[in-house]
Amino acid sequence: MITPVSFERVLAGPPLHGDAEPHQDHLARLGPLPRADRGGDVVVALEASGLLGRGGAGFPVGRKWRSMADRRDGKAVLVANGAEGEPPSTKDRALMTCRPHLVIDGAALAAESVGADEIIFYIGSEHETSVASMKRAMDERRRDVRRPMRIVTAPVGYVAGEATAAVNFINRNEARPMTTPPRMSERGVDKRPTLVQNVESLAQAALIARFGPDWYRAAGRHGVKGTALVTVSGAVRREGVREIEIGTTLGEVLTQAGGIRGQIGAVVLGGYFGTWADLDQAWDLPLDPEIMKSRGLAFGCGIIAAMPAEACGIDATAEIMAFLAREGAGQCGPCTYGLHAVADATKRVAKGIAQDTDLDNLDRWVAQIPGRGACRHPDGAMQLMASALKTFAREFDYHAHTGRCSVTPRWTPGA
Image (cartoon, rainbow, N blue to C red; front, side, top):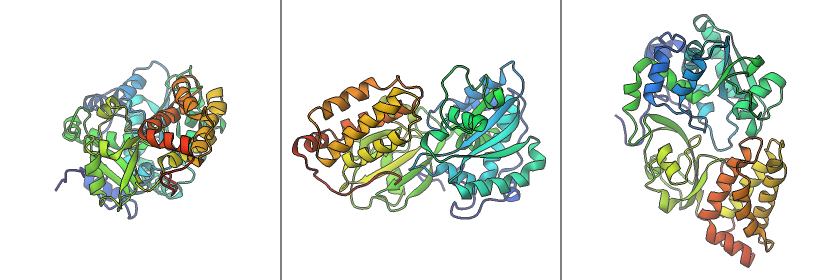
């Protein structure tokens, strides 16, 4: 029976804490994978479903595949992105570890639909269990996929999972985001047209191909339809990955995760490129990308990290900013200098040794830095920083003017 929160489709089947689902069990549960033609029925179904990418950007998957399928160039490459360098997120590695054949199904369909003759699974090198599970599953699928498949292990690093960084690493062993032009759809891996798609997006596509867009759209309470994987962590009784009907409220998800341990002061939504939100104001928030965007919040890659009320939001923000400054690509001034300046000022405020200009500078920098970087890393960092200045406005002021904190413990999402 479907509960108000759990609407399992991608995660249907054996429990996530068990072994990977064997191919024969996968087929018995879901049936055979339909065939796909370039730009054919599968692409049409994805367009009708409204499926949004699950890597964080939320771009329509059907439109992305259609653009690749309609190109006039030669054979393409498909990169299934499972790097997952976002510290609080575990959804992609859970999917690759326990449902590897669903990921391979989606990759095979994508390759057929866009005319790709090679499939590359780009997986974080630190996700050893996921790498092993995908290798075993690939060995089971060599005969039916009919395209060469290989795994490239991504280096540890926040920007390594960015789509152009993935292509750059596969080509040059350097995981730095690239500027455009040319676009990856024109010249990516080995200078060939390349489609980079998150592994959850591929898993969702494999189910839509089997059961149709109407089946997919039967879930979803508001404008965006379907289900999504979220990673719930922090001050809840049961941390982990859950599949929710899009539009489920934040309060429902936290309740389904066993409820709150103690009290929650605020939550990080969407990840380190996401946003802080005050729990009292966000409890009834529908977790729907369009609704969240209209309220200045981010669904991102489905992270819900609940901060204990006794932890300091300024301290947590300072830790995140320091991490993002260290993890920058170092290709432009906003990354090399801007993020470090923001991190240093936030750290001074957190420690109670703020300079007179720190708060004014932070307000100015979060307005000036976005849009000026060589990649989107500075933009994402400033989105989180801007939300922190809003969510913890009183605490920032208290820290800066008294040199003290109203709470003392340290807490960082994903640490």
